[in-house]
Image: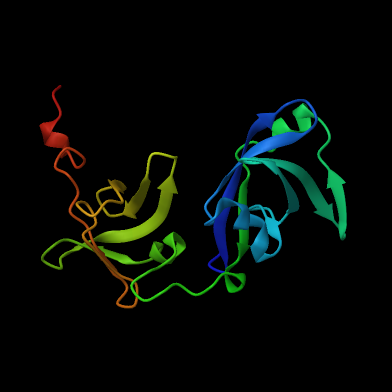
Length: 177
């Protein structure tokens, strides 16, 4: 994901037969998803959303400034799991000691003693909480993004301290044949 865009929502499953869909908004309040300017997906397609109810939107793809309404369930279904981004510059800057999850990508992961662990490759959020994927020589390590597993984040210093639970990092010699 380019650093100049921030994930702000995800189109969910269709709602009804007329092209409406559920949407997960990471904005607060959720309806503010449409308040930060144009929404686009990873490929750069632009979308317009019109709130129809609690978490339900009418969708339109914006092509050359013209809105093309998503008019049926099948068209809405094809957009399921489309991630919606906004330009970073359209969002307010984070408060002191706050950050956007996208700011974590590229940070150096270290252990509690400052020893190198790897580099944050991506942040995943599948609905049950975020997790960090850390690239390292021994292979990728995924840790839950909780205070226990990631006790310290220093975006300005370029590091995150990770303390993965023991059951996450099992060395190959511990596997039973």
